[in-house]
Length: 322
Image 1: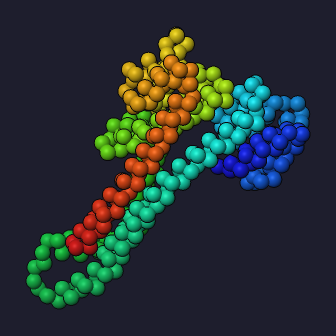
Image 2: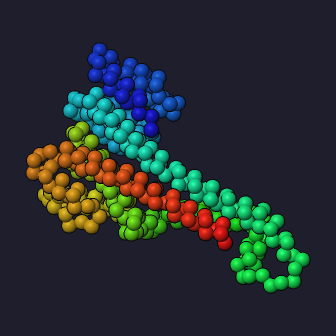
């Protein structure tokens, strides 16, 4: 997430006259504490004779495979500074997209939290003071009133049990989603659930196109690039399809031919792949497709959040009315 040191490192290297070791020291001055420590380890390894990519790879996962392989390709092609600058730009674009998505989701989440708190306070504090007037009467109460009084009494006495049950359920769900079968079922649901399928597919397509384009522009071979992208699409089913694509490419089949018969990636992305392969500009076509999908994802999220707000207000209104 700390992208400034990459830009500074690229600028120093592009300026010339500075060794890689000194450039790493300068970049470390603007980094966060964990990244600065990792860059210090990289600097010591470089001073000991290791290449930058090898030094990065030794930092126990501090730098992603995407980062390490793009740096390795930059070293091989003699364009390390350009690759670092491209990495910084790529990371900044991805960070900006995630920040816009989080900002769009913040208000609905805040509304949901406020709604739950308001309903809890109504049931546990306001309802008992109102229903106490019924205690001295001998009249039969309507069923909704009886249910509300019972719910209020239960929550006042066993709110801690409800909280523990919710936490246990969330913990159990989190554990299940970490299992192979749970992860696969969840990933399939994300790609098939009506209303969210289109958003998830376009989000994955944008990440796929942007990352693969950056790798190809940096000189990483196509099969190696796909193997890296497979690990960052964040979906087991898509990763399996990309892995099959690697095997088909080694047999002489083109990328667009394989994905054309696939199930998950959208037709426009496949068509852009075909145009890129025919024109020899696959990286540029993938970047254009990623631009388009990122704009669509942002617009769709804004539309969904604008729909969530009135629905939540309606649900709160129904709860308060009850």
